[in-house]
Length: 375
Image (cartoon, rainbow, N blue to C red; front, side, top):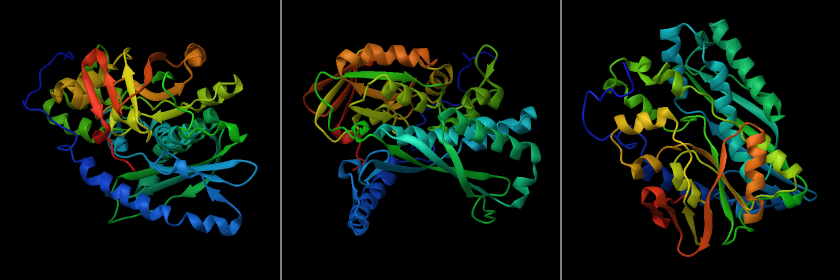
């Protein structure tokens, strides 16, 4: 069946209808951040202090004197469910890629503040001990985890493998990773204090859906004539396309530092889609004039969920996995270094003085300050 097949059931399917409502989730995040901020004084007993500007960013930063320490914890989400379904259809384990997805969720957040990833810890919570009895699947998870650590130059410190029958569904696994990194020297810190009008916005390509929006992707299944095997492009099935591993961007941020380039700000484009470009608390207008190509699987999801561009770009990465804000004179070098590492990249727009908003001009989309409330 070609990718042009029409949905069998009409009607727009939003992320909220798929079970993820940020209007309900985000207020808890804001409340938790405010409670957490009240605990920062405990660091003073050790002679340390938090970097207050890191509150509300993708990673938390502590000043320990000669350098900064950054830390983050992230979970994979529901992408493992797609791997399980595809394993039953193909007889192949997809968990090497799933392992990379999990590490990428943590590492790609950590590097936004200028950190070099140092140590990763694993949290693999299964619905019962039987999950670990599938030797091929377990080997794939271990091999993929180690391979991703090698690509990021990070040590795998250890982890936890609980069997949580009654909490995690039988036959399933909940995967998460924490990551600790160093910002050394301190000049590498990137929490937005350097961001200024005139800076260029460089967007790095994604490999597909990455690990956000899977609830929506799975909800579409009844609309597809061949389920997970429905083609999104010639020779590429829906399930396989969804399981393309999330790209790891830390090799690029390390290469930029080696080249003497310190980003003024970074954003990992995950949940909330392109609205993440509004993460910086300052009042700036982000004007986008050049778009990355939309991976076939994301265009497929948009069509079959019958979403307009605004809904799609507010939910999915739509081809942009990571944003780097740099001085305009350095933007071309950032693109060249990224391309030298095999990453698609382009100068996509500019930061301007003005009201806090994101303008995606080729699509006529505007997101304002009220479209992203994470602080």
